[in-house]
Length: 124
Image 1 (cartoon, rainbow, N blue to C red):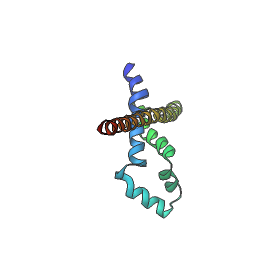
Image 2 (image 1 turned 90 degrees about the horizontal axis):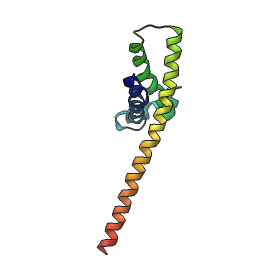
Image 3 (image 1 turned 60 degrees about the vertical axis):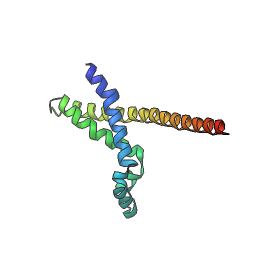
Image 4 (image 1 turned 180 degrees about the horizontal axis):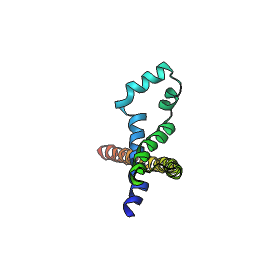
């Protein structure tokens, strides 16, 4: 039970956020992103340009295998609906984690600027 809670609220959403960042901003996917946008391929160019969209597909990529394994491969309408719902929830939770990581990064940048300013002031 606790492992399901950890997986659903922490591991899947954080993995989703990481996958979204790698695909949407990372140098690993820079050339494919640029190529798809340059070629203006319908659907794909919109997908690559929208981190929110990437996040939904990243959540689906992570959630579907997880629920397939959890349900023992039992593909029923209710399990599909459960998986689709879980995908959207994981996506939304990953957005919250994105905000948390942005706040941490902003704090680090601000701390660095404050430390730099103090150091410059002390040197004068």
